[in-house]
Length: 271
Image 1 (cartoon, rainbow, N blue to C red):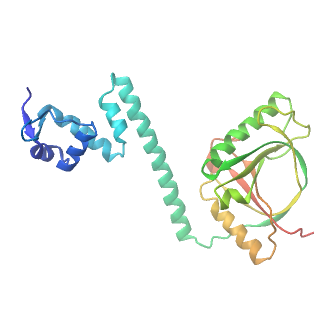
Image 2 (tube, rainbow, N blue to C red; image 1 turned 90 degrees about the horizontal axis):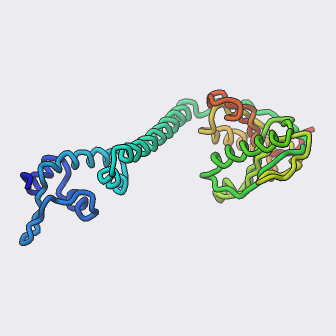
Image 3 (cartoon, rainbow, N blue to C red; image 1 turned 180 degrees about the vertical axis):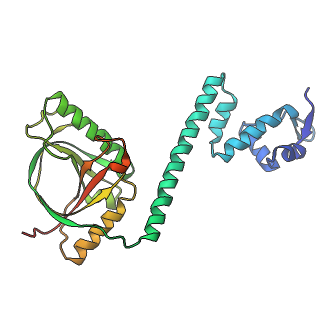
């Protein structure tokens, strides 16, 4: 039998409150070394102090209790380390997202009325290879990257060269209802044969007010807002889906700072 501490002393030794220790016991995460059958008092072995300290640090890193339990009960070091590494990757992703949000917010506060160059562009109807699906707005970026990769792979397999910049068409419902139709397309001179999700599509002509977002898609809402303000002030807006054209994207370079996305808001013809 290891030397043991009453729950209060164990709480002081580990900086875990009595309430927390009781909760960890009830959830099967950290059971006392012994429980007095008459009084129900809990006692913890001194050998449990390192385990409690590890649990406390994992909780400081927001690791879920189920994962902590899996780490503690892992049958070997490799499994334990993989669980920890997976959580660390999630933390790093979350940290990067927070840093992007902070940088974007700081820029918005410091430059609330930053000038945005807006142009008008007439887009002719074009034959494309396309994928169209209903998409949740939270999945739109991942879906777009996968769809674009599938389009380029299909064109390559059929020996068809793209003839212009890839683009996307986004239904109003995607923004208003958080789920709506999305089409990603690649213009090409030859008609693609249907394969998997890919099929031929004639993208209709449209007149657009356009601006270019530089970098990854984070913060692209600022250019959307500038376009909305412009077309409203000039009474140019018409019903129709937003378009994006991927002038430079992940297909061209892994350097997100070099990406360029042209955003097009449909307007009345001005010619």
